[in-house]
Every structure is written in structure tokens, then in C-alpha cells.
Image (cartoon, rainbow, N blue to C red; front, side, top):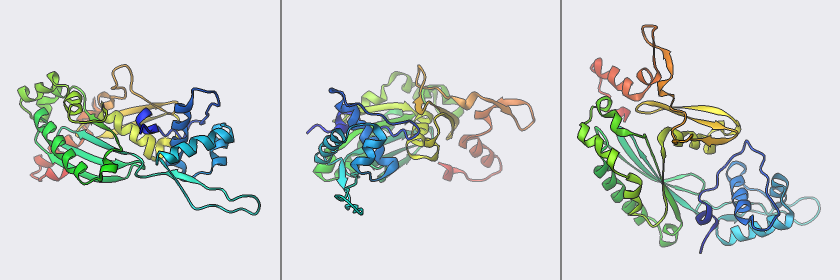
Length: 299
């Protein structure tokens, strides 16, 4: 059965915008996505609340919510009884309505997570290394997915809607900084990691810059989601960032907008330097090692 998640992917929560639907025919997908997007920031909502927030007619909202309930994407909550009239029945996102797998490929470690429809982490695996290698990464993902999916019921496994990869772009340019062999890092230039992983999956696989992805997570799950425009600083192995404009994640023409690591800042000696050279886990590790302090726990 094709669900709203299969048709559109995960609903994008954008609480800073005014949610407006349409009563015109042919807009079912948009309206379903809109209704689902209200579930995470607002919790349970009655039909009247959704109609008021979206501008959709009560009849349209009723049809949409009934279909989403039949697809097990929404769950009925306890009726709310008022002083007059029929009790209202709020609906909430079903945590098991959809599952998603997330992969973070970092310069010193990789993480694989399984989350439910509410964004709760169901399981997580981590793999540390001195530097990332494509073949080793694909093996980690293959073994990790087998372990994670093996712990799900057949019904849950069918509801995995996709896998998202968050990783730094142009990893081959960081061989010297990461202390990695150039030939190994250069493999990233010629490998399509998304295609390699897609070949192992029966659901769509997406790829995004790691800092941009972290910014998107802040927009959906964090406190900054209430703002229409903000800049997000991401401090990982190196410094990066993301940009939100008009309540939407802005990736730019290359998907790498918000590359804030090159921002000029005062250095330790007062002279201008790049943010990436003074604020990152890699720089912290270097400073700790210079003092004879073990720093592997940072990764």
C-alpha cells in the first residue's frame, strides 16, 4: 500500500511559516503533507484545530485525517469532552507510521541510526577510524542495516521510508588535514557513495552535506525552528554551518551553502585566521595531544 510517506517522503516541519492548504482538486498530496507536518510541533490536534491552522474546509480535513489514519500514519487519542456538543477526537502522529535510517560519515567516525516517525532514535551504531575509506564505510552500512532491520518486525521493516547520508563534501581535499593517505582519500573522488548504498536498499537513499543536514535537523527538531531566518554553526571535526531563509533550508546551487569554516576570525595572536583553524574538534584534539593528553574520546 502506498502511503503519504512513500509518496512524498518525511513531512517537513516548518513551524515559523503560516500553514495554508488548498481545497482545489488535485492537491491531495500537498494537503496530506501539510497535515502531517503539524503533528510534530503541535502534538495531538483535533480536526477543528487543523482546519483553523491550514484554512482547509472541515470536510477536507476530515477526509485527509481518515485516510492518514487508515494508512497508520495518525493515531486517535482520548476524546476531549466539552460543555456542549460532541467530544472532539484529537489525532497524533503514529511513532511507527514510518521509520528512517540516517548515516553520518565523518572524518574520524561514522554513525548509523534508525529513527521512528517522531524522530526518536530506536537504535544506533558507531564506527571509529583514523580516516574514512569508501569500502570500509559501505561494509559498515551493510552490516549495520542488516543488524538494525533484523531487529524489526516484517511490518516495521516495510515502513522504512528512506536512508539519508550526511557527510562532508569533497573529502579528498582533506587528506593532509586528516592525516590520511592521499590514495585512499582520493577514492572518494571517483566513488558515488549514494549509489553504492542505494544498491543495497529497497527504499530511496539521499545525500546531503553534513553541516547543512545538521542545520535542517535544528530547523525540524530544535529551538531555532521558530525563527524564519537564521545561520547555524556546526562544530564537528571541522567547523561548518547551514542557512535557513524564509523558514526553509537553503542549500545553494551546490548544496554547500553556509560553508562558514572560511569565515575570518581573530586568531590566538590577534591576527585574522579562518574559523576552521581555531574552532573544531580536530583543533581541540591537536591541542590536547600537544599537551600529552589522550583525546580519542572526542570521537
